[in-house]
Length: 72
Image (cartoon, rainbow, N blue to C red; front, top):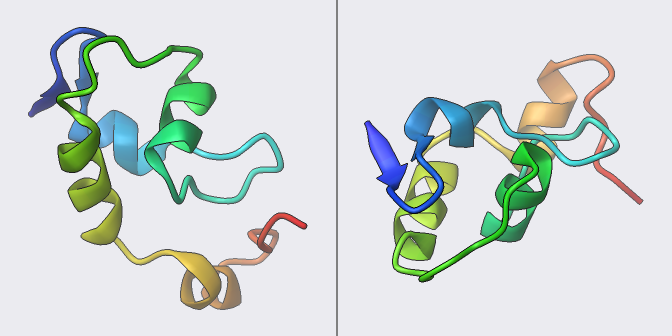
């Protein structure tokens, strides 16, 4: 499903986005940076946050996946 029509970002893109250090994206800004895009109208930010919140993230995710420590 397309979450950001300005940048054609899908929910799969959001779930696969990561920070430069390799940790999963935690904020919409991380998603845009990780995908090499920038926000345009900003209407998608709420939906990106919801998509990020719907997946397992943060310390729980890092504890289960080797090499996915949080960025310093």
